[in-house]
Length: 318
Length: 256
Image (tube, rainbow over the protein chains, first blue to last red):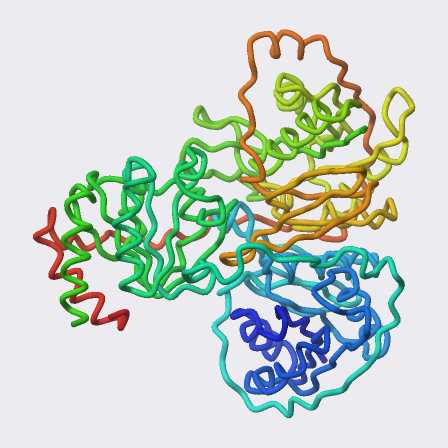
């Protein structure tokens, strides 16, 4: 059996959780999923649609919101009770964080951000990303239970019929386990789509020239129900907030359409968007590195191209 | 407030990566190669310098690495970190468990002046190995709480208020010191070293302690360069004349 730790926020599964369940099914047909918190009860049906056999729902009065160590304690309790061959999550910030706690408590290795996982004895084998996916590491994992996260979008989520039986349990938690938890949220309900979930990302780089240059990118993003992204130089210059940065140290994305406007394509940036399904580059330099990753290119000044593109897109939608 | 910052020297490539003939390491002998620190860790050091400016105390940068890591350590001393400690390795990688254990031991033994640390600041993941776990393991080793992926940090009356970016909003975590906090690039904008800062850095202490590498439990077998998809963008045209072709593509892939 493989145990998948679901990443959900107040009952809404992270879009990559189906990928983790799918990846786990390739390792073992029986996949159980841990969902922590009563708010996650309704995720069982969705998890079953990816093939989850049993959904272990950890419920406790102290589990009021995401608390990484408490999630790990619940996972470790299941490891003790069910002896899974592996504990798997998607390598989201929460997924990696919870598995790092799990591995610390169990005193076993943790292989983060894997592309492939093979369960074997005496050592498991993984292929994992380094340098934001620019290098792959093949590694042996010397442990009984394998603790590993899958790189987001390394696996495509495939539907499967699982029972999705909910098994509720009350994990044993100390006060210290919930000491670190979400106590508040700010900026919620702000307009716009989050980068990680966006189907379309309109991203700007140095070539945009300044904060005011992003107005036309915002117009295009609105028309395409997309989000704004940017390169590191843009946030370093203070043109856009840091949460819009795409790249190795920002958010890693894989939308259906990624428009890179005035982005040369530094390795750091490419690492965060290379797996986008369709990449369009708009750049004055036909030899910019981004051209080696883009599917389509328009050569020229984004300041004349984007207004025309906004007008044409608006017309096409009417 | 006494703060330990964990940082690591990593290869810097001016262009493409080249691997050593045995495919286990990045070849750092080329002319366009050098070394640097992870962006997250430059921000970790900046956070420490700002907190010591605000509350007094001291900052120490800890690293597990080769003796030559001193160059990168001194670059952090030049922006205001007080001293460095290198747990010296023979150049082979240490796995995350071994790295965390060595750093935990350094934090446990306190500052060279015999003070206890109140705070450990790390980058959320190293730029090269990207293991996403050393800060959490240090916290478990010390029995301290940990908040990771922090993009906003303020400390008031011994409580750290940490902001974490999630989609388009931010989550707030509060943790009482002593604690481990791992930050991300963007938590602040690291300052550039001043000339006096560089001069002072030469005289600041950097201690070297011998490291004893345990057998790795996460054992690197080899590295591979990601097969570059040899793609050459289809040029739709030059300037606004290309816009109709682009709109057709939007329609074809179903975004309008």
